[in-house]
Figure 1 (cartoon, helix red, strand yellow):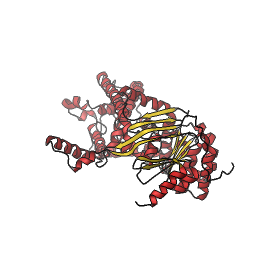
Figure 2 (cartoon, rainbow over the protein chains, first blue to last red; figure 1 turned 135 degrees about the vertical axis):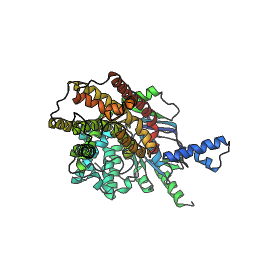
Figure 3 (tube, one colour; figure 1 turned 60 degrees about the horizontal axis):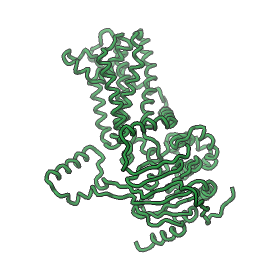
Figure 4 (cartoon, rainbow over the protein chains, first blue to last red; figure 1 turned 30 degrees about the horizontal axis):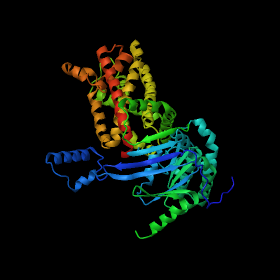
Length: 275
Length: 280
């Protein structure tokens, strides 16, 4: 594998090909934002209050707010082509993870449409998605099965995964004994080598050490040409280094979408500026 | 996995109930590999964390039987006429457990697997089926103990045991229906797991696990037998060693109950599964 120059991210995009991923004005609404009843008791009290207010024909006071729609995402529209590495930035709670969950199909958007042309690989969280009691190897098989692969398909890519994550004999130890960096390496190599067309990564590059980051960057360039990668992060450096495009979310809305350097610079300026 | 195009549209177009149910069944079939993996790793996981591993599945019911042998036969001196108490208790509790395990594990399974469910998309049905497969596996292990007990008491199986396979099948269909029905509700209402504890304990005393049906006064016995779990506990004894052909009406009633639970469960699950992730 040749070392690609790290600060020229853009691989050329075939403009005539179909996008691997299309999001058309997707919105996610949380209705019960201010009132979240998790138990029978709360549900009964809540239902009782609604009935009471109906009977008394009382206008809802400020508590009526509890039924107000809260948009975690509002009208997000973008496309991702093969070869794209799209950075996803935004303040805490801007909707980055929510967006990735919708694309992954874990949740369904309330409005809009998501079209995926290809399989999905995700690493949305370092430890969820892995069974702490099982060994690294067993977790690879389980994770593969979760993503829809047969055992013999996993066996084929197993050497590459083991080679990349560099866990050595720890691969036979239970997942719960791994350090955060080891978890990240295992999860990341799985997400990449399991060969999905669309890869979703949430805040996982930052956990690894420098060597891991460099390898991750290499693998983006090496494997990336026929797949679309989305990468949520807070770090503008990561965006500039690895991504060719960047999507900036602000309170669930698209603030900016375009060339990674442009958006990352604007984002840094915004975040360090008068807030 | 083939590179197929998936379009996810907002909630505007809801599929009909029939489509949703068909979707659940299709999911279960297409993702059978994952169901297999979850089942095997579940069993393996259990084995690893304690020294005796799978043997616990045998020790628990055996110890339970010994405790009730002591309480009922030694303390209360209420031995059943004509049948050894350990055989009576163990046989009933095996079938009782199929239901209570479905109820209690079904309530908590989605919450327990929340990490996995929120990490990638896969059909939720794949975490429910292994529950029942596990239950069947445990049942198979316990059957070995039952065989030993029957040998110890020199009780040969009756010819009616030929009815056992169909009886087991409908029992597992019914208990899986319970899992389907209760799993999403358990994720939505977390205190259901507390309620379920008491339901299970009540069922234990309201059904003839530790005492024979004849302890119930004759005039109430008809009502008593309306509880399907009563039938689930006592009929196997008739079938396996008493050699009594079960009342066909009650058998039909039990079958209809199990199938009804299964179909209602399917519908409930197909309707609720899309919404459940938000509550995990």
